[in-house]
Length: 314
Length: 284
Image 1 (cartoon, rainbow over the protein chains, first blue to last red):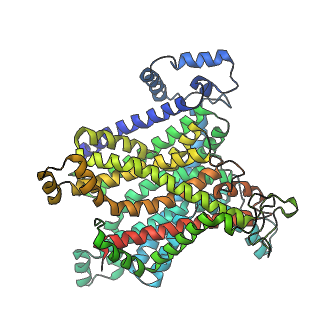
Image 2 (cartoon, each protein chain N blue to C red; image 1 turned 135 degrees about the horizontal axis):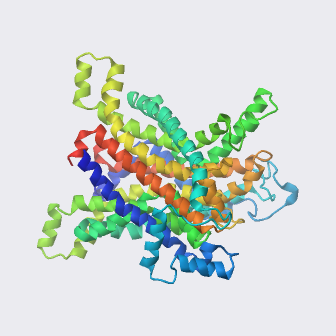
Image 3 (cartoon, helix red, strand yellow; image 1 turned 60 degrees about the horizontal axis):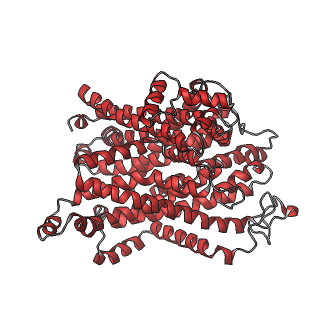
């Protein structure tokens, strides 16, 4: 087990180096002077010169990358062009908000998606199955920012009108209370929920065909027990991987959800930074979010090996 | 997934037609393709004609889906938007295919250091949440529809490279490849004539599904203001502009989103149907 974890950790290093190199290189492709891009368009020539010198922009690319990497490893992601604050600080302020949204969405998506998949599999090829799979496919096909807007119309206009209320049922934007979380979480969870339902159905169908399930049924184990105890536990293994991959989709989706609901997380920070050509913030946010995604996948792989002993020996 | 061979094609079509959801997908995709080609002739009004008297008016007999924030006909704009979505979908998928397929073929066929180098590069691209990589690329090269298409295409390269690599690995040790080599075929001929055709079936399925993804991603970039310029009737753009009037004129945001959803649903249904029709393991 330890060997497996160590090997998996070592394999992540080139990926992380590659990711950081790509993020580092991106600002070099911005039309114009990279020093100007990092210092901001309104920076004084002295500041631009200082940035150029500090970041070694007049030196070979690999040296520049080494300087960049050294700074990143020390937690220095540069300074925001707009606010003048360290990028790491800006990210640290916003990260909890996005993490809250992503984790709650993932829990909500699993709580609905997995049972829906089980229901579909146990009633395969009936109208229940067709209906839930059609719903899941619609969930995958829907732009989540549009779903967010539709939820807004529903909870702020339609539902109050039907209930004869003068106030929106849920606050359309902002943060602070649990009510503020309901719509963003629902919107962000939709795609993930749909993917989990489809995946659970497929895995369950495969497992339900296995000999040991037939044996369990033959020896008279209650159907509910067969499904949850024997089948779902084994079907869950690939589902866990999918949930891990979903985390990346959720972090990406958070950019859109946060824009719709004016949620002050990393996604909003990124979109605002693009608008202001605040490249240090763009680079830092993309780097941190991707790092989070890589680490979550790493954790999932380890969990996977723990759940399924066969993996460790391959 | 079985290789796509000529004599097998009618069989695949028959299986595809037997699935109601695949047929629904085909119908939606056909309507979408028809609209995107015929938009200028079937649009009832000029999509760009502003009329402030009609601004934000709801659906009427004259303007079926109502008017947008500048009083332009929403229905005509949606029809023209289909065109842009089709172009984005096809070009993004084209980029992914043209770059990803050769990388996957080389990686799987040559193995060794080439395989290692290509696949590690693909791992790096896959390490990014996909929309985030597209955003980074667009932020770098500047917003715009062309850059958005290219970014979405680049993001999909590793998907194709991995898919083709695994089909290549499964095929390269087959007897017919050995036979071809023994009669003197060189590597290029083996790759193009014998291995590539065997990757076609999964590629067809993946490309269909990938068009759906590309349309969704393009609308997301449009919604974030990173896609087409403001006046262009791209669906994501329309949602971004209409957002301001969500409570006073909800139809401006309802219909473009429905258009995206239906189109993406069509490609997803068709892609799923194709997968089932081409995958012999699922045959009953």
